[in-house]
Image (cartoon, rainbow over all chains, first blue to last red; front, side, top):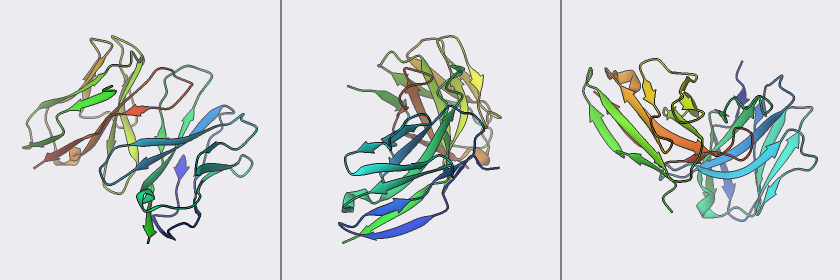
Amino acid sequence: AQKITQTQPGMFVQEKEAVTLDCTYDTSDPSYGLFWYKQPSSGEMIFLIYQGSYDQQNATEGRYSLNFQKARKSANLVISASQLGDSAMYFCAMREGLLNNAGNMLTFGGGTRLMVKP
Amino acid sequence: NAGVTQTPKFRVLKTGQSMTLLCAQDMNHEYMYWYRQDPGMGLRLIHYSVGEGTTAKGEVPDGYNVSRLKKQNFLLGLESAAPSQTSVYFCASSYSATLGGLDFGNGTRLTVT
């Protein structure tokens, strides 16, 4: 089974509107972390936001927020007030095994391409 | 403030040739990783290292070897390149196994003909 599933291969959003990118995950580990990365057309991977499985509140970073629904195993990224520069690929990723210090390995989803329309 | 630096940025190989990708980080991070990204897909872990002198296999290790002789460097080798290894390769590092995220290099685009 896929550990990280992003069901939206591509999405359009109008500039200045909000958009939600979906991410569901599968793990039996009680201690895990969830990440979102942005990959613009230039190719670099840019860290956006992090949510720990024990965090009580949803993570926020500027215009980015993470809608964490633990029981549903979903960690959707919400981008408010979209800008043209938000056009990029977005990847959801998970880190398991936080208690065994085995290494900070991330498992990535297949990504969602977001296109912001002027 | 270099962060994670990958060399080369681009490379074209013929089937059967060998090459080494170099990753260098100047943040004194313990952990380093090599990922590959194929078109339309997320990143998959090839090998990783939890400290100088250590290496371990990730999700897709076949056809690759790695070495971490110095803490700041993590080398990825292809002994006999195959067209299936055409991909973009990302190196990353982190200071902790459980805290924070990964710092990525800018990637190496490898084409094997």
